[in-house]
Length: 512
Ligand code: GAP
Image (cartoon, rainbow, N blue to C red; front, side, top):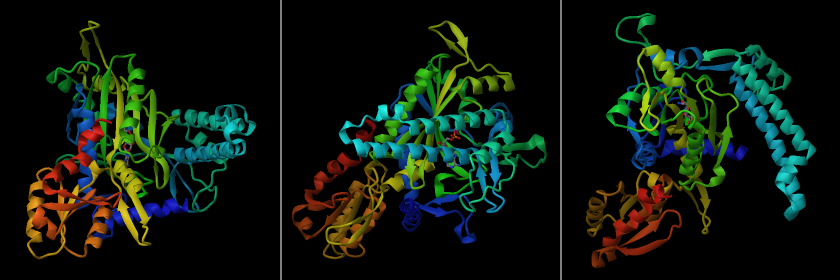
């Protein structure tokens, strides 16, 4: 655990040192839960966006993308339920003065019981070795069964109290489970209160309720209100999807853990419109497709797990998270939600406009059902950075910090280096740079020893370094060094483009 906490600290300082992420307005001591992406961070972020947009929009005939405004008519948020129900149940510990989400405290308690079960299973697996039948053990071992029963009871109580907005019941559950504050260790809790997460501001110069507008807390509503515009103008046939990447804002109370939980963040969301009754089929389809999309990056399958929700959002009839093993442990990276016809029906009701689709096959009008996939761009960024960051001990005893980023996501694909700053080598290197930069984001680096330059590129995740030396002037060959293997090979300049393309092409990733 301690090691993982160290990893988060290391990632934060590495991200700052190399220009990936800075605290926002740092010269004024920063602004809580707000960050700026630096020169390399914005490249990496753009590449993650591209990966999502290409696979979601460009590789699917029936999904199109839009870019809706952040500001929306205030009635949108009445209709969507956010004004009345976009709340977090919060509880304070009177001794540490720390504030927590009550449901998260309970879920963390459940996670501890789960870990107990896993330990029990691991112990038995060691003891019985090859003869061990995990499924049978889980189905029959009294300790495992008792703990599973405990989890179910807690989950049921949590669901009922939260669904009924029974805040006293939530507090009673926390007390009954004897949950303590991780900081003070005490059980001295306040009442549980609901807190709305939307930021509001005023439109124009008029103050008062009529002029209050909200910064969107999700990009999804910009898609719902445009459902018919897109369907009609694009002659879309159900099932079809509308995708969007954009900023969202939430006044998160418990905002910590770097870019994991921010007040201003970016979402990549897709709403998939389906026939009523088909939604569970599509829900399962998107659950599997999204997990495969993440795993294709090659960070390691062990980093992912799925978690079905007990507490459903006000709009959903089924929901599941893809969780990632962040330095802080397994946490939500993406949500897949079956949103029923809730949003479109609400917008019909509040706007007085029909938001229906005529299905020519059924010869019938209906309000489509929606399956949503929603992934946080900043969380993807943290997932990719933390899984790629390594401090490696090399055979010669030295160390290197390396970001083994998926090559398609790396800010620079190749660094071009002249061995020395004289003898015409910089000019030759610049020629190569000026040719390759049409296809790849390249960096030119001539300062310091080759070893230092290689380390610098390793630290920012550049898959290839090309060294131009005296032999280059004679035979037009260069050495190309691989970030991961650190091996160098001599290739003709004319072969460079194909060689680099072979590693960084989107095709490799999208075809997986
Ligand atoms: N439209 C559905 C929706 O917004 P959500 O589960 O609240 O669902 C979706 O958010 C995703 O957005 C999350 O899985 C997470 O990756 C990201 N996200 C949510 N709140 C965030 C925050 N405060 N900071 C960074 N990312 C956040």
